Amino acid sequence: MRKAFVRKLVELAEKDKDVFLLTGDMGFSVLESFIEKFPDRYLNCGVAEQNMIGMACGLTLKNKKVFVYSIIPFVTYRVLEQIRNDLCYQRVPVKIIGVGSGILYGTAGCTHHAIEDIGVMTSLPDIYVFSPGDPLEVEKILDESVKLELPCYIRLNKAGDPLINTEKTIQDFKISEPLNVSGRDKSGVNIFAIGSMLPVGLEVLKDLEKENIAARLYSIHTLKPINEEAVVKILEQGILTVILEEHISRNNFAQFISSLLVQRRMNKKLLSLSLPDQFIHDVGSQDFIRGKYGLDKNTITEKIKSLI
Amino acid sequence: MKDMNLSVMRTVEEIDVLRNQAYEIRRKLIVLHARASTSHIGSALSSVEILVALYFEIMNLITDKFILSKGHAVSALYSTLVQKGILSEECLDSYCVDNGSLHGHPDRTMIPQVFVSTGSLGHGLPIGVGVAFGAKVNRDRDRVFILLGDGDLQEGTFWEAANMAGRLKLDNLIAIIDANKLQAFERAANILPIDIVKGTFLSLGWGMKEVDGHNMTELIEHLEAMPFQNKMPSVLIANTVKGKGVKAFEDKLEWHYKSPPIDQLDMYLSELRKI
Image 1 (cartoon, one colour):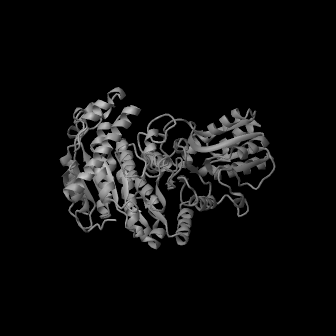
Image 2 (tube, helix red, strand yellow):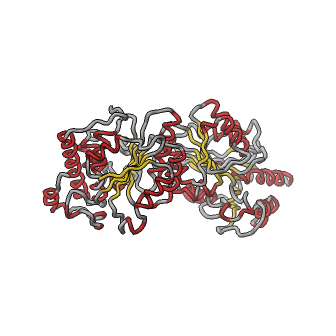
Image 3 (tube, helix red, strand yellow):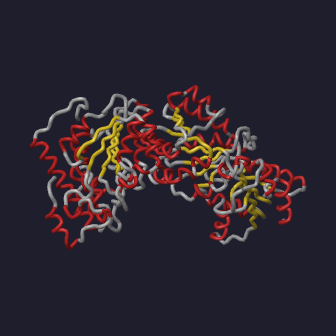
């Protein structure tokens, strides 16, 4: 996703002289191609993220299209009031790029985990929150981001995330609507995967199909705002909706869906698979932690089978 | 439009006109606080001469940008904008009343004549640094004027933004400190002595001057001299008195919170002095 991000950013900057990049001293082996090409449209703000968000606001007031880059906790939790007051409240369309979603930085420890950011960022009014599931979605979201009149937060995973979409599925990409990335139309199990869980969702889908269980896989690339009608239509069609997210169980996407079901008086089965509402003190890789908390493909597949 | 390199001495009469503007602005804002029963009258009164100097003499109102980092002094800003004819007089009727349009801290989405919304301290300087840097990148002539309070400087963003402004050599930016010596619950000197603030600015590559923040002549002379140092951001320490203009309010912490009771408004207005 990071490679797709910087490739697309360079492309946008070639077309638009106002594209500007700020980093909080991050981006080694990611941002170099942009910096080499546009040295005058880049600034390393240093380890001073609050000032960086304020500056991004000021630069945008001078008509720049500003992208701000750092590891997720440092451009979300660290700067929450700057995002709220300088960007959302004042409707200043800065684009915040956070890398390392979920427990990608598993071994780095809790300070570097990003497992509450969906809850935190979607709690703010007047912001778009994106969590692309593969590099093609990153490109689509970046294209849209420069047209927005509000700020946005884009949570990226790592370098080298697999392609999940095909050239065909990505054509249906629409902001705020789940994207069917599986190319399957037959209703059965709906798998809603957020960001980094999309590849896991695809593996689960394939396992279910081996056992003749019909399923569709959706990427929930936009967490806010959400086109409720589009979501309700999908929920109505399935026998079970499974939500996969590398996020704590509080204030996550599953809570949004369950409240939607209640509001709409829909009697539909929901399986929410996420991390517990706690810090992950376990030391280990992303795969290890996913396995420990039941976010691996085998556990997910078994839980789905037990419910249908 | 003023030529920024040419300092023109003002006559006593010209300065007197500005002092009268300041008097009228103080009148307006005292009425606002009494009518709406809102806080921060002391913080507003200390900043009046600075606002008059900026809006009536120094700023090019088309290209220059003003940021009220001490957003709680907004009644002084609104009153200045009205006195200057930028906001309508009737606008003040909507200050802090039900269904009104003027908050107790500036909201640019409601009042486009305000450049930046503020209210939480420590936000004005970073935004101003971004605007000044953006102007440099665009090769625009904007200058950025940021009014900060004593308390503003205690936020960590002061350090972050002051360092960045020095590093980027933003000679199109000036921070004006309304140093009224009193913050919300304490003497500012007991929390962060101004000498530390001054030393920090100097060590981070700013040009600095100090002035009596109620002396119109001096304020204008100093502001016209911006940038104070070649290729450096400027900081003007304006020594002021919280609550300036009404003896009963002056240098008293409680007037950070209190507002004149409406039935005593005439009395307070009669005590208002021209500075």
